[in-house]
Length: 286
Image (cartoon, rainbow, N blue to C red; front, side, top):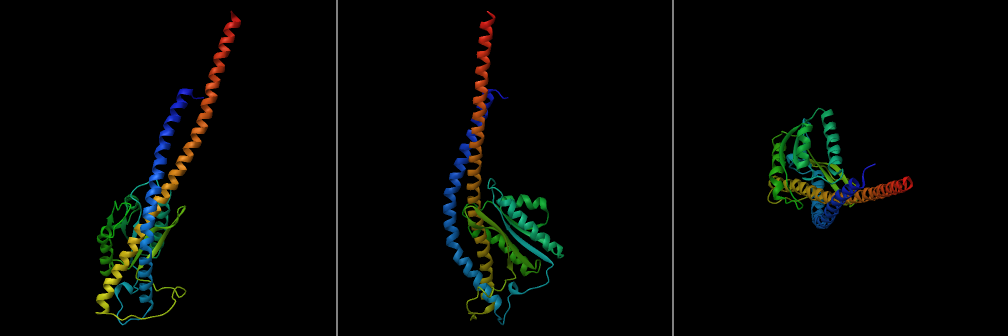
């Protein structure tokens, strides 16, 4: 059994760690509220863009933009959004599992893979995983800005326009609630028609000045909005996951301290009993 002094040292060390995890939990909770508000504010625009593009893909316009045309899939691009920091539970691990499964399916169909990576954790993972990385961006911060994403996104859009990739996917975490974050893989290009159950009514569009110019701008903004929303969602997921992980760490530290305190009391009592026994034994010998 460890000595009382060693146990006291362990308790002191774990209490110091517990203070850190509690502080990180409170910081994450504070940041989460701000990021959630930003996420909720951008969701309506992102969802409306998705529906508009879904309508366009279902319609039969005279001009079909390259972003709306299906073609044989020889090479697939994945935009993967992860966190820059750790200590957020299994958030990144679950995201990478979803990405690896999607990549494996694409490779089984004979497609080559290109990556666009957002976040330091994804950069580290995919360097080991393998695959061609066309672009990467790190340190987006707790409040990602679309200006920091445009350059990276443009690399993938140009690759799609030039025929270097034939399909583009977005892999990110979606914020469900504080306790639940869901990794998702969604197709960005070519655009997907909206499902009939979501289609409340059918309509066509009048283009001004012309369809080619307008669709090029709108479809580019659509991809940018979806990636930006993915980055904001991922930021909210990061803070929620970190808050939960740090709370769990603090609770576990408390349990360990309780066990060590019990062991300390037992060791101290054993020491006292031993000293008393020695005193009684010495007195009897006299």
